[in-house]
Amino acid sequence: MKKIEAIVRKEKFEELCKVLENSGVGGITVMEAQGFGHHRSGLKPKMKIDIYVDEFQVEKVVETIRKHAKTGATGDGKIAVLDLPKLYRIRTGEEGAGAI
Image (cartoon, rainbow, N blue to C red; front, side, top):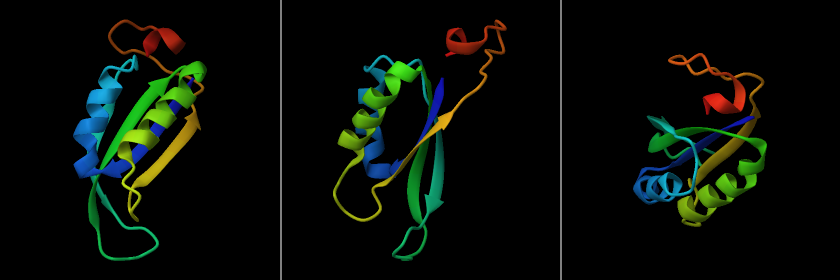
C-alpha cells in the first residue's frame, strides 16, 4: 500500500477532485495549506490531498494529478508517494487493502 500526498493550487483543486472522485480511488482527505517554493514570493494558498492506494493504482493516480493540476507555471505543487506499511479502518477493524 502507498500514501500519495499532493499539494496543488487552489484554483485547480475542484477540477482535480471531480476527476479523482470518478477514478476509482477509495477516498481522499483534503486540507487547506499555505506554502512557498524556490521563488520565495510569500505564502500562497494551496490544497493538500492525501490518498491511500494499492500499489497497482499509484501510477494512474499520480498521472491523473499531474494532468489535472498542471498549469505550467511556478507553484503548481508537489506529489509524494510514501510506503504505507499498515492501515486500519477504525469502524470495522479491517486492515491493509481492505481498509482503503
